[in-house]
Image 1 (tube, rainbow, N blue to C red):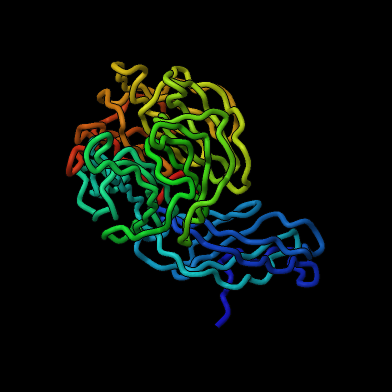
Image 2: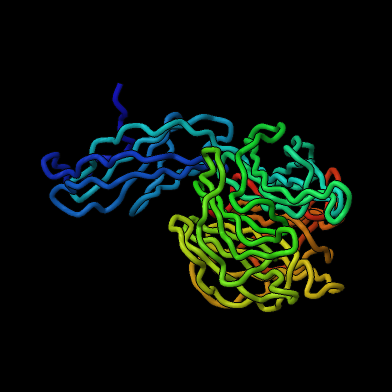
Amino acid sequence: MPLRPPAGFISAFFDPLNNPNAPTIGTATAGNESASVTFTAPTNVGGSAISSYSALSTPGGFVGTAASSPISVTGLTNGTAYTFAVWATNTYGPSAFSAASGSVTPSAPIGVFGGGDAGSGSNVIQQISIATTGNATSFGQLTARRGKLAAFSSSTRGVWSGGYSNLAGPGEVIHNVIDYVTISSAGNATDFGDMYTGGLYILVGASSSTRGLIAGGRSSGADTNVIQYVTIASTGNSTDFGDLNQTQQTFIGGVSSTTRAVFAGGIVTVSRSNIMDYVTIATTGNATDFGDLALPGAGGAGCSNSTRGLFAYGDIAVTGKINTISYITIASTGNSTDFGDRTTAQEYIGACASSTRGVFAGGGTNIIDYVTIDTTGNATDFGDLVTGMEGIAGCSNGHGGL
């Protein structure tokens, strides 16, 4: 049975000879009580320019409207599977519906923190529900014990890469392993592939919905400026992306929008850095200068929604732990601005985000705190980790790169 338009769908000037052709459906991506639906506009727009595009959910009949792709559809029920069809409208009325999208299921944003425990390394993965507050719960285990690793994610997968265990001690291992979990389903991680550079630690990650980036880091006695990438939905070894402007490690953090990744701070040679570099995630190439952090620093964590990136400092010197948070507008370039303070000063923390909240955890403690990303101010207590960790890495299925 064909889809029927919602009430008010037909224009008073309805003329089927001048209506636009149907759009071509793209993909639907689930969010928290929402979905983002992509499409390709029709070549034949009819007798006048297309004024809007709309997407209709099945079931429920929820409608979202936009001037171009993608269309956000809100009001959905988490845990319910939906498909979407898109139509175009001009002065003369609506087009036919596109074909239906694939099925997606909205869910509340989940944050996962993996690894940590400076010195011996850890394989523990812990999870939180970002939209609420409360203590973390056990999720599963990484494929190997390691700390000071990098993390990134899509709307379905969380991925960790690199790290070390037993650093500078018996059995020291600097890992090149990449592994992943399905964020919506607790369980142990699965091998994804290897970093093509070999083992690295104190590196950083960022991602869009399709591509994960791994930047910088340190191997045995040497730092790197390498950026490498993987396609998150597949498995396999990483590939060269380009280079950072400096060889650096122990970053404050990486953040991303749907198009850009920004890497900030870290250690260059022996000094804390205020450098921010950015790349266009879909296009390989070397990084470009973004601007400067308000303070040089290292050993922190970054998180973001689609517009604003937050950098939570770890330290400004070897003995100078601080709790400062700084922010940028990812789509522009320029220096960072003070956001507020975390509840405590820790270094080697992890972070994750939804479209509204940024969450910071660990740093040798079990403390979790959070901020509202679009509103500057100090952090609020969220709850506790199952196990306090230093050198953990966090990611989520609801961050700004999706």
